[in-house]
Image 1 (cartoon, rainbow, N blue to C red):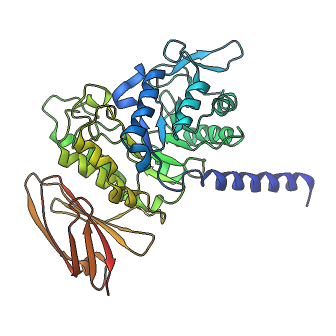
Image 2 (image 1 turned 135 degrees about the vertical axis):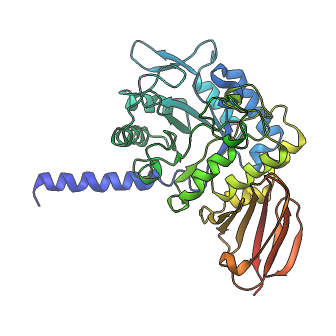
Image 3 (image 1 turned 180 degrees about the vertical axis):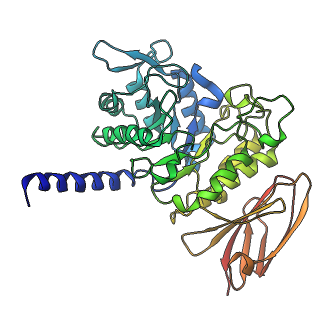
Length: 407
């Protein structure tokens, strides 16, 4: 083997090893709090501290939400050596001190940048500074990077290259930081994002606080993605998700109730608690990252119950790492089947119609032979020796069952 061939072989093996290592950074879907929908680009150091305190006080941390993801708006430009600096008015103590505070609460801190000169909100971004920025994030103690794609070319090849450049920089930084790829699905990231070093990848546009675009009032500007719109994109991508790499249909809008922030744009008028519970159910069935975005310092009892239900969270965080397969998509019914680590199965029954309806089927029609014990994760109702499913499902409700075979 010539020296050049040997070098190429070593380089190839190193790249494969680096990708494999990166793919272990998110063995289950990441869970945490994303600042954008509530705070937008007005986010401050004190806001982040308040979120951290609230996550501890209201039980979100103990339920498994471990990250605080700072979205766009933290940036203050670059210093004379081109090092990233935070906005000194918003973050007077600096990011290292803030990361230390978040870590002291038993939480992790994520941050945001963009694969272009400027971010979506017009702040300094990371193109051509990937290595330097990754080292800066590592020095600050950052634990995750959301990497946006505003201002970047529309082709897939450039996206692959730019995301891989940042992933490689993160790997070389000396600190483990999962990379969240956020190019909104237009370049089919599910086909390449894991190989580029991503731990999760957005599959749809920015979600709004609404059930579906089809329900928008006349004159509403186009482009707003609702809960059902995101489901209908993400549900078809189950074969691309798995341990270390996740389809991301965007943030949870649970508990926003039409708040006039970014999620209130483009028809984001708010949802019912039934619809919010459905979003939580469907995201967990689809093994999606769970990023809370309402005001958790003041959330009501229903919102807290939705976000901290240990049974639905266990389905999302199941170590088998399978996204549910949509087995039925007809007549305003969607039925999802998700295999779980211990041989059990989760089933979700979604009624997309405008009225309450009765759903009935045999388990064998869903590929499940024999008899099953069923447990409703929201009502806690249990049934024994079931071979059929029969449930009255409210409009936009998702019934979620956990099944254990009883032969």
